[in-house]
Image (cartoon, rainbow, N blue to C red):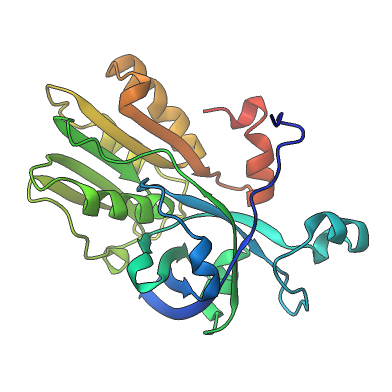
Length: 274
């Protein structure tokens, strides 16, 4: 039995880029497949995620990466970086998956890669996790998030039963960043526009959730996004709205002003607790 200190890493899954599509000014879809797709399993979670590995631009490293050996041989800046992304869709019948990336110019690791990735470029996944799927027995659904949560929310909306009711609150920069989503007729999709304000600096999402007329019955909630917003919403949902753990999926996907590596390390510290 593995302990936290010696738990084996999940085997890397090596795919390749099949298609790249610009969905909006700030979102790019990568469709990946290839021989490695045989190692991909749909886990049934609409928030299914994977830890992707990105070699530095211009690197001659070939996946799968022997990370232990590379740490002995290379400086930190030459090692592959790990970033966590939602799998937007498992299209295993056609031997492919979709991954949508938020892109803000040259900022970050994964966004710039996705914006320029060519067919044949390697796509390296470090295993697949997840924990949420719509409950068909719920009386109402609330889904809320910014661009980082949009792939998971879009996937959840597609998986809802036809008679599902509720609301999805989606924060983006402007109308140009809205997507044409598939949702049940009884589930309202409401877009919130930052209108040029930097992501993670407004109370748009928090205010929208707090301002909802709370429905009767059992409400299932999926709320993910920037850390400060999630910290603000947890007590509202658990204390004021009285949700128990079985009704609520809430976590931070990122933190304003923090690089991914710092954000992930802070999850184990007081500052990163939600």
